Image (cartoon, rainbow over all chains, first blue to last red):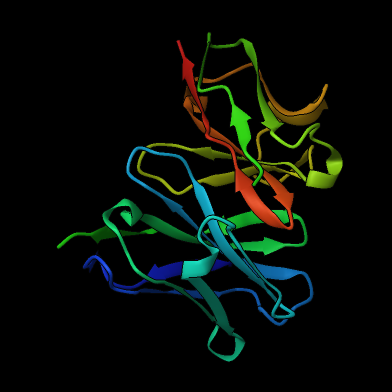
Length: 119
Length: 108
C-alpha cells in the first residue's frame, strides 16, 4: 500500500523559510522512473505545481518560484524535503506531496498540510 | 511559461455527457505533453483519473475517458452521476508540471 504524508509547521512568519517533509511508504525513490512532487493550493484556488525530484536526483522547479525553492531526497529515510524561502501571506496554502511513476503523474497524493503565513 | 486553460465551470444533467477541455498557451496539446486529469472534491486531496492522454488508472470509473480533441486535451464523462460533481484539473508535462485552472462541474 502506497502512502504519503506531509509534515511541517502550520504557521510561518513572513520572511521566514518553510521546510516541509514528505514521508512515504510502499515505494522506493531509488526505483527507475519514480519521482515525488510538491503541489500547493491556496484556499479556494487552483492547484499549483512547485517542484519534483526523481530517482536519479533530477530536479525540476516551477519557473515562477524557482529562486525560492529547494527540493531534496533521502531514499534511506523514505523522505523528500521542500524548502521555500522568504515566505509571504500569499504563500498560505495546503501543500501536498505526490508520487509519480514515469508519466503517471501524481498518481498517489498525501492528505495535505495547511500552512498559514501571518505575523 | 506555459499557461494551461480550462473552462471555469460546466453544468450537466444526471445521465448526460460532458466534455472538459485543456488548452496550452504554447500551441496544440499533443500526446507528448502526457495530459493527466484529476478530480477533487471539497475538503479532499485530488485523485488521479487519466494519464498519458487516455489511460485510466485501475480505480477510474469506465464513464471517464480522455482524448485529444482538436488542439486540446479532453476529458469526457458519459452517463454522469451525481457523485461526479467536483473540480477537475488537467496537467501537462513539459519538463515540469503545469496545472490548469480547473473546471467546476455541477451536476444538476
